[in-house]
Image 1 (cartoon, rainbow, N blue to C red):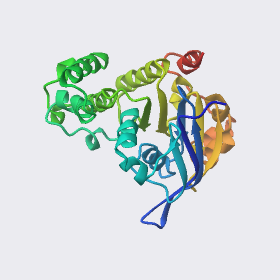
Image 2: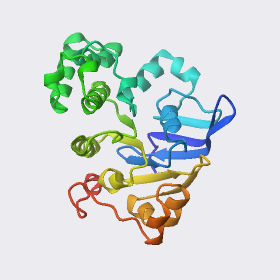
Image 3: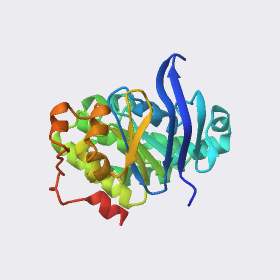
Image 4: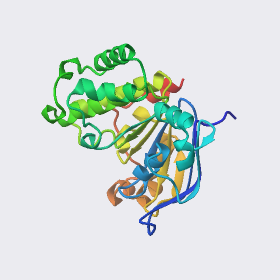
Length: 274
């Protein structure tokens, strides 16, 4: 078996050293895989993503990225820290927490400039990413002039401009209108087909077979309670009910009925894995 891109073993984390967020969580993510972290609000999905991107560090357990353990000390090493930051990108649930520059163009250029890329290369990347995400017309606008969906595109553009190997998304479809949700799901499939490794946290079951190769379910007591393909987890009504991801009415009907944006027989994630 090949070495995983990301590997967590028995992670535990407590806020203020007393409020549990993760309890003995292990996770393995292979290169090119799209993994969905499932669970109700407060189960620890966002905390796990923040550990994966080096914003938080576990109280117990270990986390390795690209074969090297990620700790406060290793991230302070200039060579490893720079390499890690360039290879892992994080898109926050709330774009307002991420978008801060005076203009969209400056926002998208910020990351590559921090990585020390030559300005002419940065300008080329900015141009390419703005075009890819269809926001060239927003380049000179300030973030406060943008809609929620536009801010989400800018936040994603800023991350993609650094060309990371791994992309982390926290509730990517939250608070988006249907058209923006559709666009984002199609982008995730495109990125997967391009070979990106993706980990996304969600409690939106409708998107799983559309985007994910594998799902990992967290319970409300902050532990991994199930793992498998989207089809396997969506068919396990008992597990979904126990994790507070469906209500009793759906459980009584025996299984969860879900619909894809392009119809029930369209499975782009499966195609991307083929």
